[in-house]
Amino acid sequence: MHNFVKDLAKGKAGEDDFYNLHNNKVKLTKIDGFKGDFIKNNTKEKIELKSDNYSLYYKGGNSMIERYSNSETKSPGGPWQAQSHNCTFFVYYYLQERVAFWYETNSLIDYIEKNKLMENTGFSYNKGYRTMWAKISRTKLRPVCLYVQTNDKISQASKSIYDKYYL
Image (cartoon, rainbow, N blue to C red; front, side):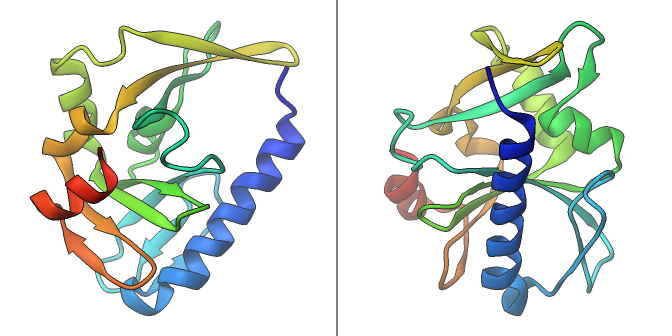
């Protein structure tokens, strides 16, 4: 069973690290976390950050994309939650390597649904509810990724950057 308080603390640590590492490049403002995590200062666009504490190499090249925060009530999770909060960007951040994959939220959802990438689902059990997610290969998400951001630069989602982080 997952511990919500511990998971929340890990998520906060990921948000703090992302902000401290990337704020000088992207210029961000932290927001409450209930309707998104950051605002890009120059465009006022909202960002939802999913920080993963596992190594990006640990899960066999997969990202764990949450579909429902609570599968029984069908409350949206992951990019669907970001969409419901009007977040322009959904960013998947690997804390150990400090690598962020930037997606435009609506394009990511359309791509996942069009390509039926949520078919291999699993559940995380929490006290009183289950979270539904799918392991999706980062290679399959390659066509819809806008940027791959590392601790030293932001790169267009080019072949060389994918070969380094997607395979």
